[in-house]
Length: 94
Image 1 (tube, helix red, strand yellow):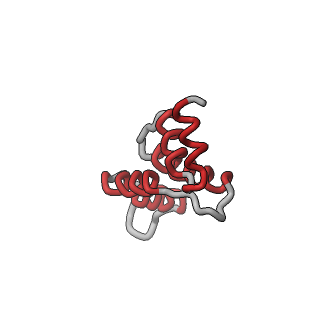
Image 2 (spheres, helix red, strand yellow):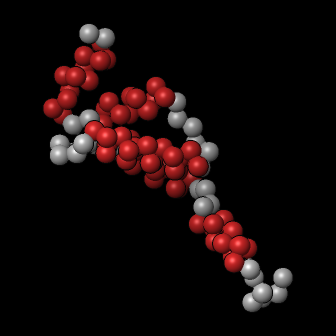
């Protein structure tokens, strides 16, 4: 194909490949953001879980797997401080 004769689908595919490149740096940034995520006091639980899920889907698209038990651990740690007693009681099974 000569320059200037690209079709829309081929341009779209090339752009997608360019912007969806998986790099170690991108994975690290997403994991850092996921592990550092903290629920704000004014935030709804659903919104917080949706935000975490969005990050997990991006990581999944980069072929990074996270087990359910790890996700639950990260979620519990990310709750705001007023839920500490709730999280502690879940941890020890009471």
